[in-house]
Amino acid sequence: MPAVVTRTLSVERLAFDRMDEARVVAQHKFRDLAHWRLGYEAYLTRMGRFSPNVNMMFERFEIVEDFG
Image (cartoon, rainbow, N blue to C red; front, side):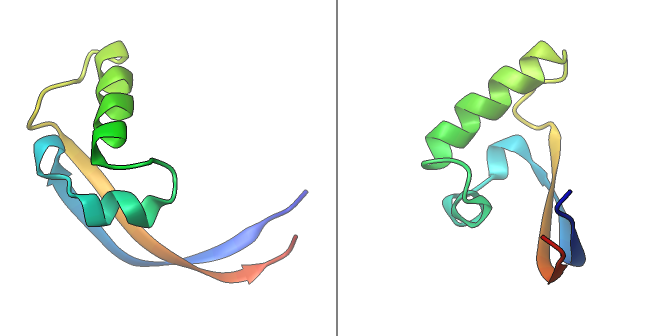
């Protein structure tokens, strides 16, 4: 089973409506900010937690070692 060791570089608390294109691009998961908003709004709505000012956690990390 592949595993990695990561190191957290920073953690930010950011309101949903304050997310920006640069942070979205860094995730390598969404096409753009609009795609990110659609996905997370749908998820948070299903969880009963959506509002434009809901806090999101944004972690930057690096891979220290890859055991895969």
